[in-house]
Length: 556
Image (cartoon, rainbow, N blue to C red; front, side, top):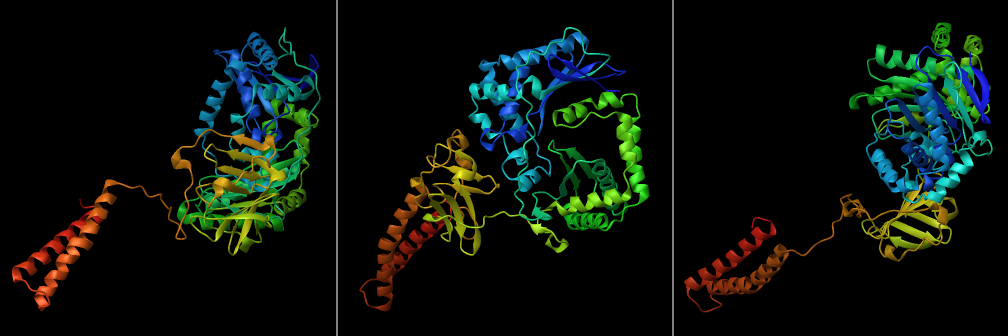
């Protein structure tokens, strides 16, 4: 049973465990609370908080999630007191001298991170804000200051916005949580970049992905289990098309939950996997759900709730519930709620899930044939302003206006970012700018891509809080114009080979041409001379022409 109490004004949850004591301090703030231009501020703060705690033999860590930030550890009661007290002290006295080092560590961490196949799905559903920010790099690391971190800490890392949990007999003696006073911060409201659903977008892998948003309820958790069972049976067991066929259910913190599913495939099987995946969704839509499937999912979940460690294992989830306004239920109550779920309820939730569905198709595949509409990748209209033609393709133009920027191309929809809806503008010393709109649409301003684009100035039009100045790029990272055939146009450099070609070209056209003309004249009798002179003229012209040919083709 989970007990509720309070420690220094912080709500606390305690449950017994048969193993080592472990505990955590959770705050209701995560990546969804940030902006794109300050993406990574919570993660950076988490690292600065943990650094002064040193290296220990016991396990401890911090995690920055979508909606919460969590400091947790396993060890003795004394270890837990030291750790959690240290977290609160670090929040109050941030290690400012460690800022640049932690920036570098987080950049390294991000560069070595492998993105899962479904990492782009939040971007396509929400855009470049709130719950869509998890799809983007932590660009804000470049500009976040110590003052920004202190302000972020004072706003979110307070006793009213925290929950303590302890897996053990009781709260360790001597534990104090010296957190400042504040207020509970609700989870951010979710935006949408999808005008219509169900929708699809082409992914960058061979996998098929699915995501939907439904009201948080027990029937939705059962639906997730049923979906996983159906995908696994159809795509792996029966057809042998996939190795991974899985589904996941995650509360968002705002009264809704996200259902995500994924099925992988070999290149030659990705079309078949997409078709089989859509067939499973169609079964759920028409209600082809067996009592046995629901019973199997419910039985597995209730069995897990009946173990000796069930309450201790549920503590982080219970802390999340408490932070986001949900009651802390007993394991028995949760089991009863699951057992009350009917096939009809699962079918109803399946309809809601499919109505809000976002499908990620494998590379080169679409899903309009299955009733899914394309998710928007372009804008409805372009801005009016000065046009800068493309250097590689003159039909492509950068348009810079008073309200925003657009990229247009003959016969294609535009991409537009308005200054007042710019989530972030990345800027490089070479003049390159990347504007990303709140809807996820982006526009590049690159002096190397558009004629006279080095004269474009938009920094004074984009809000300062959206600007992210970045260090100089490697020359290979600067984009080059594409010709209409798609091949990059390379800037020509004068070399010794070019000089030799030029000199030999002049000699060939001059001396060689004259020698050839004289020899022809001798042969036809228009010029006085011996046959030997004619042969010499032919040889001179032939030698110069052959030398020019060899140098032109790189043989010398």
